[in-house]
Image (cartoon, rainbow, N blue to C red; front, side, top):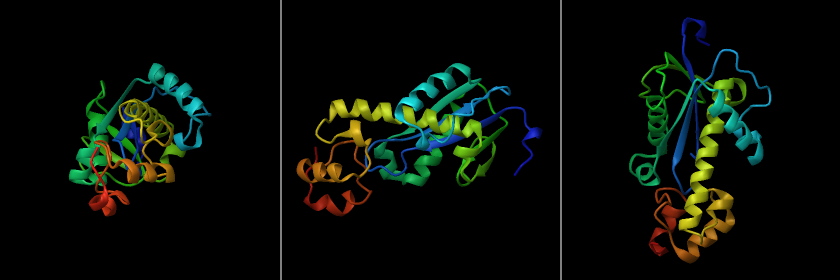
Length: 198
């Protein structure tokens, strides 16, 4: 791993929403103060919704800077989910009020970031700034999907957040696709000939 002591301002980056078949992909970017410490904060997937909301408030109040990048389902279909995820991460970094020297990113290397970076496998559980970014991304995306549920109540977005649950697939078969479905994702792509548009 890179010796991050050589860098003054380090941002943690993570995403939420690569796997769902509806909704945007969201990246979080968080720069923490050196003295930040909260041993309960970890990978957002390991936390309850209540805990994520609680930690979200702590992070936005205590971080030196934080931001999100959001790429729409339409653009995901146009450029593919990998490129969309990388774009969301870039947008999140560019939206920060403080320019970072270095980024620590969960998972695999990312193309096109505006600063040097290193990918950390399971970083969302190992690096506090990445853990915080994962929480910011997840809470932001979940809130978006709750709002989308109000626009398109037939699909149950509030509950499954756009993931391909059995109930979600059945709703698509019954009602067709709506504007926030990712039509290049399976099983929607294979079903398109038989589906109606919302």
